[in-house]
Length: 246
Ligand SMILES: O=C(O)CCC(=O)C(=O)O
Image (tube, rainbow, N blue to C red):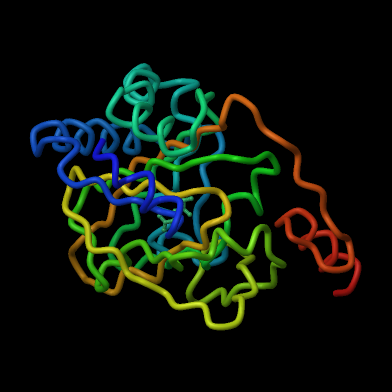
């Protein structure tokens, strides 16, 4: 990894590594995960609006989580030195796996409201390695980051717009936050930290998936994040607050 990468990551909260996986490797991943998806439901699947059935594309292609528990290929891929090596250097510590995920994001699928991963995972530091399996552009709901947002620490959460986001919460944007869409080619990897605001908008294409294989790692030495019930900074805290007030 170039030595400038760590300085960039520390300044901006993310780092884009180009061409980490070859087109042939990406093709193997796509074929593998499409076949596993076609097998039927898997533990922890997260789909779309259940009332819409197959009309919500995310019910046909739900997000997979923690495939490494039941899929040997995922268990090997999350250990790939090209993911773990830079992630460890960027976070400045050894790593432990937190979770693996596969977003299929088919044509017409909603995105995920902009958030910080530490709003879900309450230990820090953590780092994500987000592997693009398709070309990612504004049209198909590329990743969006808010450069420098990691410097704000953990931020409050609010309800997300259900027309745009398949999950219910999002970050309350800090003053002056500027979003940046990240163009990626298949095989590129986006590394970002647990405080970095990121997410994505819907896939507005008719025929292009935006698939991504994602590994989240804990640093070996983590601290717990506390929450404030009056102004939650966690998704679970937001859910509790909404249940009490709705
Ligand atoms: O792929 C997306 O749209 C969001 C992914 C995400 O939030 C993550 O990897 O932490």
